Length: 265
Length: 299
Ligand SMILES: Nc1ncnc2c1ncn2[C@@H]1O[C@H](COP(=O)(O)OP(=O)(O)O)[C@@H](O)[C@H]1O
Ligand SMILES: [Mg+2]
Image 1 (cartoon, each protein chain N blue to C red):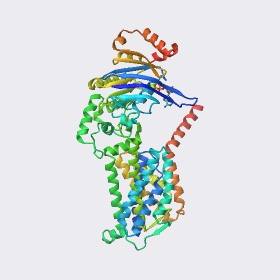
Image 2 (cartoon, rainbow over the protein chains, first blue to last red; image 1 turned 180 degrees about the vertical axis):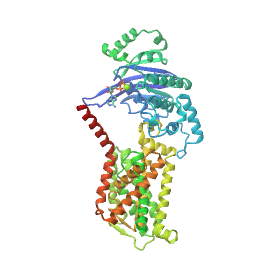
Image 3 (cartoon, rainbow over the protein chains, first blue to last red; image 1 turned 135 degrees about the vertical axis):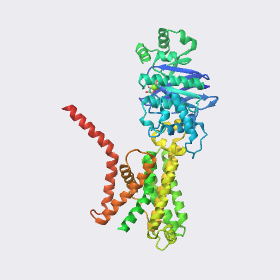
């Protein structure tokens, strides 16, 4: 459903700070895939997500979503089909607006609301129903400003906002890494539940290799702006950690230092 | 005394329109829109020029449209051509000087003398007697405030509010922030144009330099209002604060004018100080805290 063909992206080209963040990367995502992405810092994982969601246009290559070439489509248009969560729980919500108003904005992606319509009783009930699913008591605080919520609550709300209109693909960029362990578990289990219920295709970046190999149905390892290891369902179950490191090292031409980074949590 | 009260209230209500515009651009969109000064004169020039030709209503209407166009130019410069937002306002403002002169028929001043205006026509209806200007102006301002309150609760209004709060979130909701910024700036400058239009016809004159400092005065009123109406910041309270701030400011103005404790020309300096201090307050507070902490640590 998502086809990435040979994409490249350089930052600050032609200067001493030139970084080739993506180098001819190819990826074919199937409908319903839940893919985890691992790799050391600076491997280009976030840049890959930025390319998919259109924060910038790639220098080379093509991005095709459900047979539509979106390579040159601006980010806000792609957002209709692409949901995204960041590590920073503050990024996905408007702090000075209420929970209800945030949800109403996210729900605009459905493309049904009229420009000059206001939030109706019916919308309110719908949002309330959705909030109950988070099991955080937020349904009783619909008129609270989002800025007063905890990081975990904000991230859970962002997750709900990203999926309230089910996207074709959900991009999760270490979205539990900044939360305390309890909140992280909660948000992760919510993520799995929502993804499962909607059969959403999902890409998840994580720093935790154990979590990475246990979640979803496929794992990608990135280094130097490319995918160097692509493990499918069966392989992931049988492979040992040593073999992963071995293969990673072979693909990345990196020494042990980077293996440690790869393994660090 | 009654006369002072009357002018204070009338000016407070009419200039609340500029503060309302700044509330939209500065507070909601988080953009310092320096189109304001020139846009105010544009509204005044168009309105007075048309009243001079015997079309006071058309003048007001076209003043609103022209104000919106000025806002559009500023928005276009910053959203499409990458001009930094403050500079975009200054550029438009500078260009407007010539446009305004043109609208006034290449003179720097027009007086309406015995011509009909919105205000004389309304006065002739016999409503409110001496207070007819005030009644007319306050109705228009209150309607504008209600409109803004309603508008900001619509889906479009919500997207505009979110644009000033978290622009990435707006994009993620599949809304183009260029569009919301444009709508916000156009709307804001419509109100600025309307304000200039009303003041022009009320005072029966237009002057090319009438707009100098309007933006800073508007910000001062906004800040004074917010300081008086503190506590929970809801949209309704913020909009009411806009009006209160203007009335208080005009009251101070009248007192200085009457008592002559200060030459009235000092008021702009004082206004500038109020704005600078109010905007600097959080930084000053932070620095003071840091300084105190550092002093304790160093002991
Ligand atoms: N906007 C940017 N400007 C300049 N360099 C960038 C930018 N975004 C990413 N990079 C660089 O690209 C490389 C890949 O970064 P990133 O994709 O964030 O890595 P990660 O795998 O840790 O998410 C890094 O060297 C980073 O410094
Ligand atoms: Mg990253």
